Image 1 (cartoon, rainbow, N blue to C red):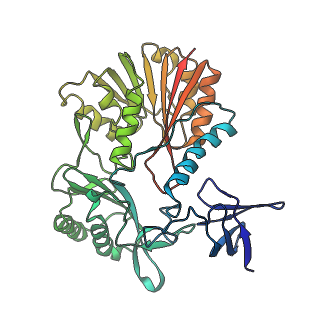
Image 2: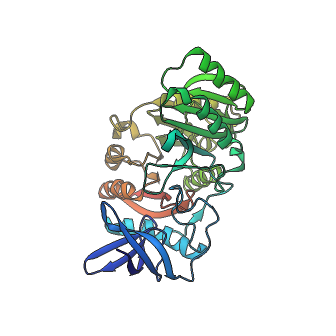
Image 3: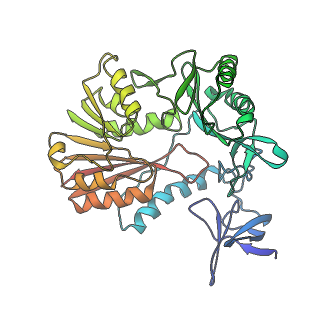
Length: 413
């Protein structure tokens, strides 16, 4: 049944929301103030598929990507910039308010920069055994085959072509593949997962493809296939050789922005802990001003940091340790000598570590988060432990999506 709906507001996932006494109805790609025609989505009684916009919003703009609306990578290319920025900042404000947290939230900082420098492409066999390489479809596990993505950093040029070639070479394996591509100073770094063990002949074929596409490195499940040049990224003054499949912030400007925001709050801190440090996007910059203790459960990432720090002139000492902070967070006695602690956990947050920080006497805590909901939970633990949440700064590096980063400043009272 086709329905005519009036859209009242923009939801947290970028969907248009139509409110009625019966509840909320969600219409992807619709905007507040619009009148739209939509039809039910099987199995989702509160969702509708947009068929036609009868009365468009004055804030509607034409999407810049031909795959928008089908590809699930972007949710909101169709909204004018000013209301988009307001919506994204409000995602943080509303999440904190729902958690009972009252704090000033700065204007949104655009950190998209040159675009995404790392992506994970999926390769699957679809209908009639046709290979597709691309991103997941909107609200589906289907794969949208793409040959171009306008939100990528130009440094990822050639990534799609290389991924297609590798997927075609691995066709005899008959398994779904995930192909992670990262732009580095020496070229593309690719790690292929899902293939399982391969015969020597196929490894040779992959090696030849890596050479043909001038990849810096090709690995399979983290195991080396071909190394032409070390996959190096610049972090502050340091050069870091990435371990296979390493995590990086989505954009280079996003990483730089988050680090600079954190560093601006350090003041005269001389001893700083960087928890969930990864390969050192914060630690290697913080070490320009202070001694750093860095910690993460990812041992290869920690090893990369340990190698880069002493090789970089002008840095103060960096001590790094592989440690699972979810199971073994730093306790108050271990935190005693730090002037400041920065933590940047995965999306699940840092509940165990925040509990220990709340019981500590660390004067300054800088929280970096990619999930406002888990940040709010962790911040409440710190506030209940005597910290004052002074400021929250939202950062938009995942532009055109509902994801937003933030940097928060908490001081012990």
